[in-house]
Length: 484
Image (cartoon, rainbow, N blue to C red; front, side, top):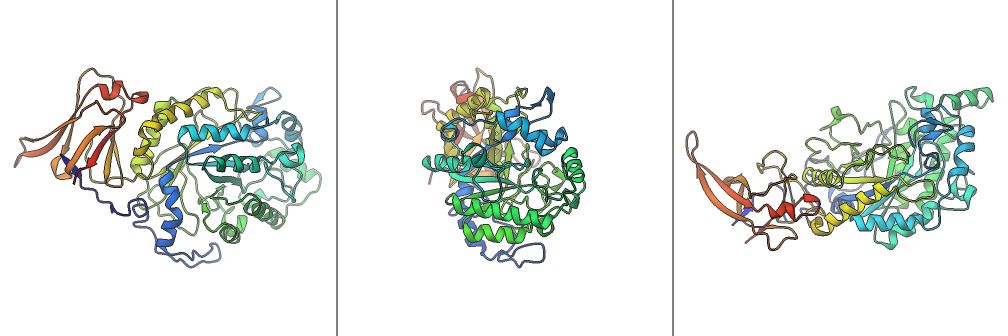
């Protein structure tokens, strides 16, 4: 019987592993950054629930949902369709608004699915790049409340909280609707060509300071009118359109912290591309946000010492697109969840409701089947953190929860037992079992094999084929229980 000799601190495992190697707090501000006034211990306490949660639901819903990827017969993506097809906001809204008809109770269905899937938090698009807000705002008529009499953010927050979910809001700092928004701060920043043409023809000047006041006013409404907001998921910055110049980010972040002291924010008020793997390993400046957000990918080695969250789609698109039929298998999503656990991150998995708020059947099925796996194996995900000193075969992954080790084998079709060899110096006394399969017995023995200079000592686990045959989605979890 054995125990993994982990490098991580055991007693405070849920708090400390991700903070190791992080910058020392408090941190002074400057012209482009707000100061961070909390200590590292205070930050760890604030981040505790998020680090434990590991799995969240992303919800991309808005005017684009009604268009379903097509504008008057022309395909153009999903939530980016306005700029992909160069549409001015009047033309876009005239087509999209009549199609956007959320049915009563749609947010209840979202929260039900999140609960069944095993998610612990939910993040809804309060406003995407097209500028249409899903909440009631005194600053604009371009909202679901003014157009439809529906405050979707309020409905969402209530539905999420009823099920014990933490509440998060995605909020775009880019705005293709507001006439004062000035995309020319960064010429490469996406913007609909015909919107720029329309503003010029109408003689409407850009006044980014006016837009910044509008942005701050709407965020203040979100921070004050909907109870505790646990996450602000900003999107996004590029080039010079970032920080103080782009969004008056220091004041924006300070306001959020003042109104919701426990709020957790990502780093996209500052220039960051979740697609840019060359940034992997770059230290996160905590003045820019609490965590970093690799998009549609899981970093090869995670981000040791940094809080991070991979945001992923079930199909290919974030918003609903009727042509988006490339749906991931439940096993693929489960493996992504395992990767995040093994590398120290969270998984934020997206749903893309249709015009009436209903969830596409294929997406719903994936969430439900992932939930069935989580019902059995969730103990290996929640509160997990990486192990950096265990040698496993290709395709195998591992993590720890408190003092127990969890092994994630790859999907295998076999009728024979599978042997797993781990160097004995990496392990000590533990007791192996297959999670959720009490009758499936894993045996273990200490063996010596010839080495170049001296014998090599291994612990050999023998795992019955039934572990895979009886596992949900064919993905068992091997638990190594600490046996003091």
